[in-house]
Image (cartoon, rainbow, N blue to C red; front, top):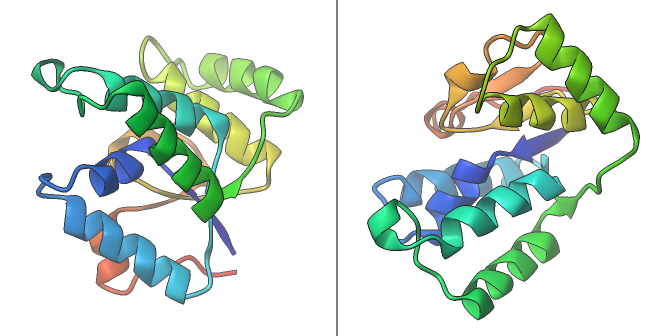
Length: 153
């Protein structure tokens, strides 16, 4: 069973002062122990970089480039990295039109398109409502995982 890690999970894991740090790490560990293959796609890495390198005063993590690069290398080494594929764009375009997606939520639609391209149907995120409009997707919050809700084959 495979599951996509949303950017907010990785950011909370990197941000030791976050109140969600322990919850994120514990949920990811529980999934790994249940032999769930934890995946990331390039968009997650791009989004991580944006927030990680943004100043703390602008709701970022304030990392310098070398620290952010080390964090990204760790993500790529520790999780199954699924590269962008040609079919993602057309899938994304169909989804934003079909689901009447406006503005910033188009980023989430691209994650869903990448999931479809890589045959993933599970995502771990703190923003469960962001993915509610998409059928065929199982959305998991870290707190649900810690209570025992896990993806099934």
